[in-house]
Image (cartoon, rainbow, N blue to C red; front, side, top):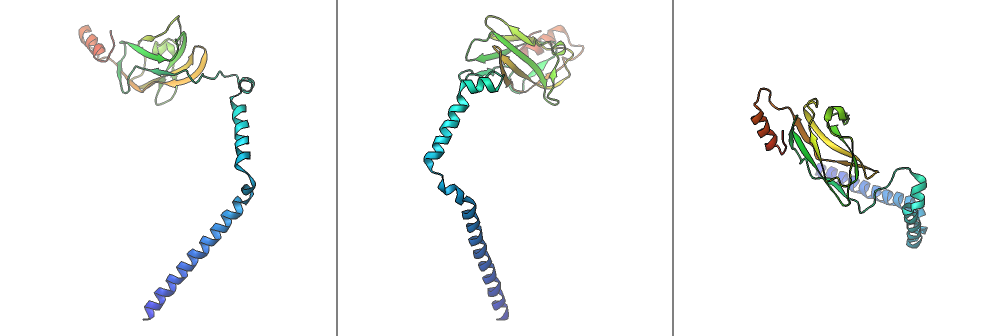
Amino acid sequence: MKNTFRILFFIAILVGGAYASTIWIKNEFTTAFKPFDNISTESSLNVATVYASLATSTEVIATSTDIAVLPEDLNFSFTSPLKGALLYQGCTYKIGLLASTSIKEIKIALVDVGTRKEVPSSVSLLPEEIKDESVKDISWKVGMRIWPGEYFLRLSSLNTIAVDEKSYRFTVTPLTEGQSNADQQKLCAQSGGSL
């Protein structure tokens, strides 16, 4: 019997404490948010409308930054190399590009996944900048001096507009030494390239 009274006493203390803390928390929230009760929905919408018109104003954008803003209707993606592709040093591959506009100028770089640093063009043999009437894809002979590992391509400029687009990750690996030219051609072809 004594134990029953003790258990009921502790239950009463726990329930009372929980109820008291609930009332205290509710009062704290009411006090904290009371200043916002006077703000009407209409005035909030007016502030949001003014901010939105300022943020999209071309005058504000032109005076506040030197970086060109991509038009919303301009879309770009790499169609190749595919995700997880295996590219061999010395093989030539097509880098596929897909854009919602014709591409006349492009700046591209090979980036090491581990260090996030760009590989110099002299090592990767990937042209840094390409200008042409219509760039549809890029022919890239993978440099023999590229360290084997995981990489991705980074597009930094499209038609003189600064962008930051990345390709899927792919792996660069060397051709096996001592293979015949025919075997090397076969490996290149199996990976989607040519020798």
